[in-house]
Image (cartoon, rainbow, N blue to C red; front, side):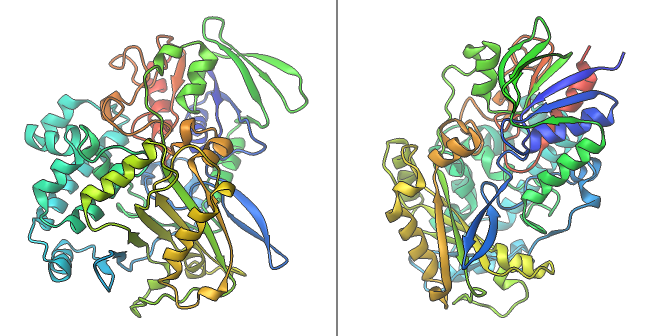
Length: 504
């Protein structure tokens, strides 16, 4: 008999899971709470100078997606992707000129040495990181849930302790001598939440954020805006026969009865029968709807990342222009610290309720990337992803924070008067807009006990890593599952393939 599944949540993971199941002959329904699918990969429009300007409301750049997910879902044939080849550029308080983050490890080692006397093993770090990446990517491709024994067999006990179960601080201290190198190489350890640099398992986030294979470990852009990825994937899914129901508010999931009850956009209550339920939501929502509160009890969900959208009337002219191709679109970083310890203290300030503690700022040059892909945007646009914000106030309540971020960025711009509009989004906004528990972009913190093989909500991970609780017909593939969030779809892909192997 033809199996059927009800996918709850229309973000990238829900859309990928539905795609994989539909291609395997399953009948799939997908319920999305908002008016259109996309999850946190969607856009919003603001009028600027009398013209509508569309910008990313949530995710901005593409980085963690695997090339096989892009190809096997059908997205590769319909999207134009591009990544700048210009080195990333990092600014520190103690340096007058930015540091060039070269892709060539030997050139990067020379840059770090010449700029601030780094005498560590930059080449060895990149070599060892590549081994970890290859191991993780192989697991993604095989749909193989994480296992420390496999990590030990593939990497060795010492490398597993260093890169997987150890702390980010121990990892960085092992390879580098200067704090500015450590800050750049280890900033992802605190990217989604205020995880202490010295916490167990915090090292694992460092290689994890470079595992994407679409751009060979780097990050890039989608022509038309990243929201085109989920818009296109939803269209593909519908072509495969997936029934997508928007503005659907799920009221109850009964695994034993095999039913999902929800209210449609007309306000009518619908109870639908299904063989399997797939949650592509946050884990708290899944626990509430299934009555499995114990699965999330004691979990840490706090997020501390924010973003500022900045729109300019004319193309931005950067003060540090190198004259090299793609400079205008290159990824740029501003660090508020030269010390790893002070960066760590600033990260923890958010957990203690401090509104804002300057940390670091990643600048995504969307307008320049659009021009590089042949578009002609009416305005230039950059997105500033930054740290650290507490989970207590919305962006429209924190003008002083928005102004501080804008000031730091404009200090590197030669035409600051062309700034037309800016908007701040905080963790509280992310909860309101996308239902992220406590505003975390990865739903749950990437910390000890919630990382690698522990990033599951299954009662028996060895028998079904992506199952939710003890029921054999309920599954979970939201950003809270292994490996993590971002616009990647990896949890959705791995969960769907596990379903195909185990579902009865």
